[in-house]
Image (cartoon, rainbow, N blue to C red; front, side):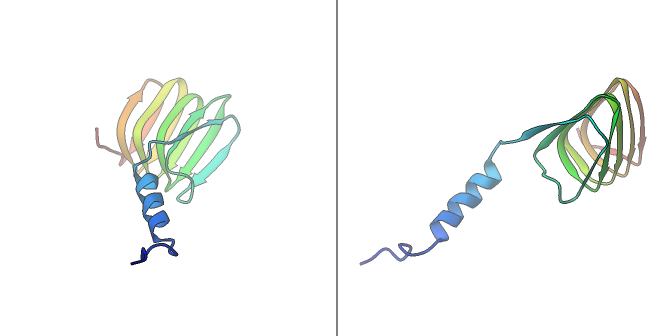
Length: 116
């Protein structure tokens, strides 16, 4: 009897779905000029804000966000692991889910829900 999946893309699709959902892959992005991210931006992304840049996040999901020298303006969305606002960083966050936050700079959390 022939293998019913021999001419099908189903096995490849199953393997791709399993690897895609359980992968620990992520990317690091340095924000050194004003940038906008939204709900269609990649989810497994770490953002580092430097050089006085502003990251505007509207309804996006990020893995980590580190504000060293710059500003984070976030409305909606979530930070899956860590929000870090350094001494030279500022943040305005409105209606977002944050797992863990370390706030050393000037941060205003408006209706933010800490989940950690």
